[in-house]
Amino acid sequence: MRENMSPFFIAPHRFDAPENDSAPVLDRRYELVPEPGERVLGRYPTSVAGCLISPTGARRHWVLPGPASITVTDRRLAYVCLAGDLALVAGKIDATGVRHRRNVRLPRLVSGQVRWQWPSRLELRATGRPTAQGTAEAELLVVCDALRTIQQPALALGGAVGPVTELARLIRRTVACFRVTRPELVELAPPERDVLIRRATAPPLTGEARVTLPGSLPVEFLSRDDYYRVPQPAGQDAVGS
Image 1 (cartoon, helix red, strand yellow):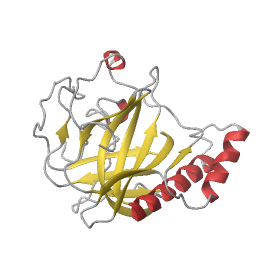
Image 2 (cartoon, rainbow, N blue to C red; image 1 turned 135 degrees about the vertical axis):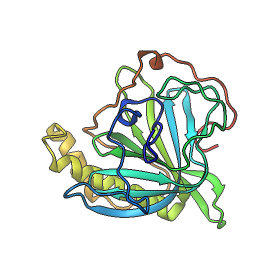
Image 3 (cartoon, one colour; image 1 turned 90 degrees about the vertical axis):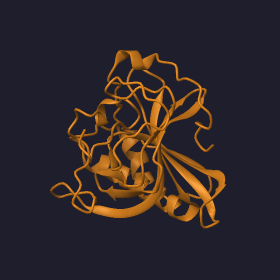
Image 4 (cartoon, rainbow, N blue to C red; image 1 turned 45 degrees about the horizontal axis):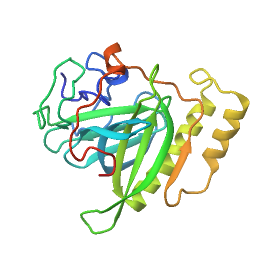
């Protein structure tokens, strides 16, 4: 596994599998190297966790142990974490088919990305926890749809309310603009296009919010077995816990 390759997004989805070369390319400072013509729109420090959302709730499958650097471009969101080892939820199986124990040691540099074709909605919520600076904390879920399953992979980004709310607004506007201006990648019905145009110009998000993003492309599990695997119980795995 290359150092700049995420072991998985929500293990083991195809778009960030170890054999997939679509992981973000990083420079010597571990910052995202933009693709030709790609524009960097902002960088944010947040906590990062990978989740699966089902009708019965949301469970964390992995958590980065320290703040990650989030880079938002006009094409994707990329995250890089240099602090410590990736913490896995007990009993999970990674994209290589290996069942890990809790706190297994993995590369200290962890990265991954979500391209703007994928998110189907954003959820902004208060966590009820203070940040290290004593300010109120919020969490943003970047939720994707998956083929042939009702489970939805999501990236959970947490931090102070102000920066996370700003990040949510930037992602909403950027995803909307990306899909409206790239018909070769995203096929939109006229009503979906109208909704996205409104999303691109909507006022800032306030409080808890849920925003749909029409025109999303679903991701896919690597293994058919993963559609039916039942997660083993593990404490403090729910989103926001």
